[in-house]
Image: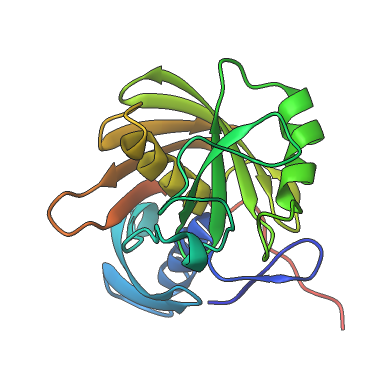
Length: 218
């Protein structure tokens, strides 16, 4: 799988996209297996399909281990990873995590358009992030339940971000705000996340739905 943003740039990984790929190849008869391995820019991921009436309803993705070394995220903010670190020039603190692509997670009291649409695009291109960054604004409802909105690198605000939700799950544990299993509420729906103590992998479970089909004109 390769994934391109709205501005034409290629992203290393897309958690929601890989679930959609899994649904497409199974529902359209390209594969017949309930467990798939899909090669991405992050590496080869394992996906478990929940099937009902011969169609994929939900997908559990092994998203692999989070990358927590600042130089590999990459960011120039101090710490491995930076935790609640101030972004120079901006009134925001972020915890940085890579899930194969870079994320800056900001925990806030309330999520607003001023933060997401105003601050998000500025943090995306801040000097502290040499490859730009996806920015998550997160409200913790309970240790096992969060609400989030995402400003994505190269695309602007999106309805959901699978890798971003995984980064939030990791950042919540690192900063002591959440447990290792959370439900993330995004504008496009809910995701179930867990950061395993056994293998250090992050697991994401969520739905996939075909919304339309058509022919691309030559």
